[in-house]
Image: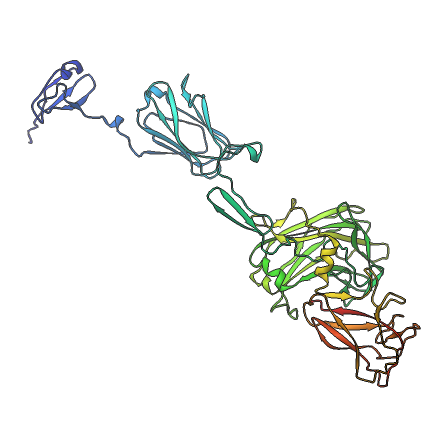
Length: 517
């Protein structure tokens, strides 16, 4: 059998060892503290070796959704699940090795202002002068160190303390623009620059501009433009559209009145590619105010499409189909708002449609829409939006200039083209002039180019299409006023009647030029 060999080193109490000077490399045992002491042949007491309990280790204690009493041997306490506020009870500061760090970390990502992790000091011990410390942010951590007596000090942390207002924040603040603006930072300076000036990309969002007339407009099932920028598409039968009183922030609204056999009403706007390009692959919020005059609740839907090629609407692509909007109670105004992820194809042009459903089968049933806004909203959650940014409602002069890129009229605001006895363009100095067939006698230059070459319709003073009126307010016959050399910059008026035209001292003519999408 094997013979065991027992080895014993020189040993003594802590007091004896502290006065002993051993040979270089000799080990002795401190029987008071149960530790090995290495001698160097010169230093009295030698050099005591650390015990395992005194060595900083990388031990990790995993906690699953519960209170926990920390041990003096713990170095990392990691919460892997958290469904409610929990407490970590610290050991006595005097029992924890000095120079060792205790780390408490939320690995669950669930820590928050309502699901906190609280570090509670033992007895009269303090943590940075307080009896406890609180963690309240997802994936946050807090590291503390003991003074070996009665105090813990926070030496590192990542968390967000709750504050009552942004003015109470003392750390880093994230800055984002709600209007699609570019945000950049350099040093202590934050710069916010807008990409083009107008945040709201809708035209005529307050329904102030009506170049086709603000009285009752009959719109058939083929659909048609009404207020500038806005077209109405009924199903089943024609509807009436007119300018109506607005809400608190606006004077005007677009009102649709139903009729027997009407089974659906859609109000929509197409946004030109040069404007809609700002939406490309962005988070976008659309909103409007709706007055429901149908006699019952309605729930509109929202559909978003983009053009398949630049401003080509022959085969549009659907990006969002009939998304339900907020329910609109009867006889009241309701804000509807929805946030969606715009397609990369938005740069070809965007169509926004509000569908009010089968709720207009009588001429007593109406709906109004105004305060329309569509803009880029970085960081907004997609879906129904209960708190959209305030709508940008531009002054009527700005909107009229914008709208005249797509349609323009010589009539006064709100007067329908073709109206009788409306003020007209005066064509002067024609006395004695015989205007032979095919010759031009007037030129119209637009004050700004239109979107594309328009379709031009000319009207007499008395409202007859294709005729010019003489100084005695008599119309001069068919095709005496025709448009030629039409471009985005203007056109000329010429005689296309087939015979010579003599107007007299002055002539009168009106026009409507249409370059809508």
